[in-house]
Image (cartoon, rainbow, N blue to C red; front, side, top):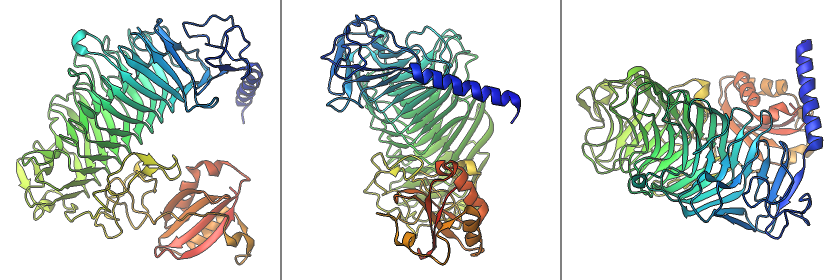
Length: 605
């Protein structure tokens, strides 16, 4: 290690150690008093700095923690917000107290938001966790990050909103009011926002959008960068009768954003996921936007709608898009500028139903300068007369290994003015599959997600998963490793090849209720193996597909995948946290394709 690197690491360690010594933990309860020290649950504050009713003399500093009593409610009609956060502070409403989560409630229109984030810290995250944010049908945004007002650029450490409920936001565009559930924004080209996470929230009863990544429309230089939107459920949006937007919206110059594992469903009006930009000259759209492993259902318009001028680069893969009133995915006619879109391993089911001249996927963007428009490994299933895909101007740059199926016979795809049915579609796509995908149970659609991220996260309800007999199994084209994750957390390929659709068929997960018997047995040699020995064991079955499950020592499944060689095994290990935990014990259980256990080992990375 070079001397400069050692000095940098040492300074960081000193900084964090010194900071941790100075950090305080505060408690806030409805029974408290701002004259209390606030550092004990028995002597809490009534309010805290950043709340308009605060009357104490204390201040918050980066690194501090503030616990609100989870059984209490704080109501305010005072400007500018119920809580305006201090940068670098961890606020929590569910960890301490006698209820489920602390409630912040607006009792009048607030000119900022119920929770306003206008400050951050260069090094320490700013976190709001475990609150019920109730706008109470006032004209007030739920949580605003540099919106609708701002004081500083927010380009420091992460701004994290997690495990919050945001609800009851009222506004009316006809009256000039525009309020959102959660919004990250900026204006005037000088208040950029960077490093935002919106995790595991529930957002509903919102006049406009539930979650909006929305640099302002005033100047093209506005920018929002490095954003993660994961694990949220959003519904009952678009209450404003003048609103035609999205449940989740990504608009203007949003750079390096990931929208994943969200359950987006049942808006009163509008689109499921909207991707757009301001139509004035000079504005650009999202760049390097990743939309993966979401469930988008029952929108009153399209499931995913991409529109407006300006350059855009988007990857859409592993999503389930079903039963939306219009298209599952549409690239609109008004798209201009440079355009790169990858559409892989999605499952589209019964969008635009009962429309003989409608289609589930449509490409209209002939005015755009298309560098890439790829459509591979997707299932497009219709139980009605709706067509699968329409590309009347032959805009696709490549398409392969898709499964197109509808129950009544007729046109599946129209491309370049030619209609293709199941009997002749291979003239257009040689690798197309047209057989019934054999879903597990179409009457059991997914209702959100269950499980843990990076372990067994998967749709709650696997009716849209494929069965072992499905023609979608192993019939996809192998893509780059970047796209190898699936909506059910099985790594691709699990079998002989990539599956088509959002799911990757995997052997049902076995549950190890307690450490297995082999831990007390010799197992033909030393119990503890190193990774090289396990790799050698896998290689001894040269050319055979093996299924590998890895558990922690308590029996909790961490990852399940299939492999033909140790290179792939090493790749999986390097992408999971346990590979970075030397000295901890893990269990590897190895099966053949017939689910016969071939070997079981303990190992320590």
